[in-house]
Amino acid sequence: IDVMVEHLHEKLQKSGDSPDGWLMLIRSYLTMKEDAKATAAVKEARKALASDPQKLQAFDAALKHYKIDVPQ
Image (cartoon, rainbow, N blue to C red; front, side):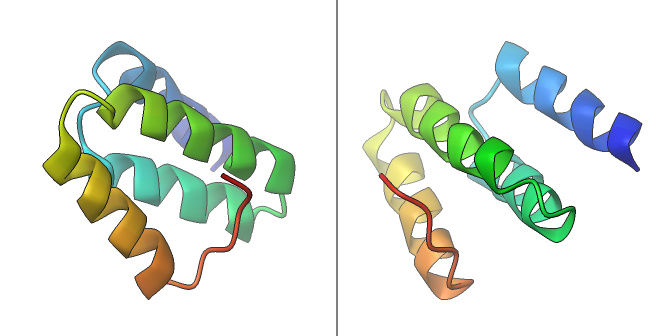
């Protein structure tokens, strides 16, 4: 599982314009009790999605919907 999650992270680092992909990564890290990695992924996602306000808004809405509480 760790390898699959790391592959997802690598994929998102190359082309991270998918709010759903970032959300999957963050939820995976939280499930694995990797809170620091989840927080870092939220920051990476916001940076990657910053050029598309709609995608950034969808990402932030999904975090709230799934009650993912990470620092901004």
